[in-house]
Length: 357
Image (cartoon, rainbow, N blue to C red; front, side, top):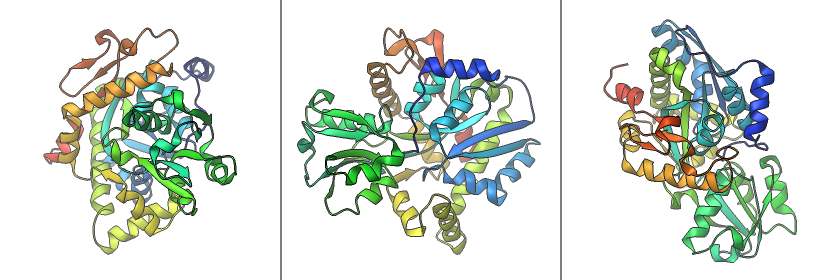
């Protein structure tokens, strides 16, 4: 899915924070905010909004400034956010829990933007059934959403990772790796999926549309910063839904916006629209609110935290998946209520839905 490099361990991240002297973003009323994003179909709107003045429009409305910075390295954007250099960042629900939350930074999902509905896929070479993956080496970015997708796919055939061998492979090397004679199975995300599927031998045997709503793309913010600066959250919501209105419009302006986002992500209009088709984009605030307040979200986060605990990604010494509290929009908490570090709220999306921004 997103552009991954090798994940920093929590211990290494702690060192980054200590050496940088930054620490988590300071909780106080302030006027200047910094937002980080990285290239993925569901996050391209943030770059477009910055380039076209939509960010400035909403920042001006609330008398603040918002600096939007693109990262070519997804993990680095999260590390910089966790270290306190940014107030908000784009990330997935899984990575929000395993990196900033596990790193001790209380983080709130302000915008639930979309979920992957086919952008992430398992591809086999010259074999067309998922069952054929048994006994294979599987090239993927270890501990990423690709790893999660593999685990969930194996469950559907009564199997587990014991039946395969994961080969940690950088996303930058994935297309080349597939072409190697000894590589027979890969798990990756668009636009890499599209590139690999151009090979006659490539057979897609499972994708994220088969686990709908589980790989979720978010705009999150430091919870303390958000608490002291609610106008920042309102501006983020305004930016998102303004941009959605343009991006999804069946007009010349909409086509131009999609073309610009496609070019910025290294593809063309057709390629970008194909990625959009494999994404359940919440362009309407009411739909995002309904998804976020659904009981299904809690079930998804339960699956995600169990996977992360199994992989040792909830912090060293974590005794169970309950080590980190995850607060849902209704106030219910999965895990430790005394250590809530990841939160979902419908507040800002609901305000947008009601025209109250």
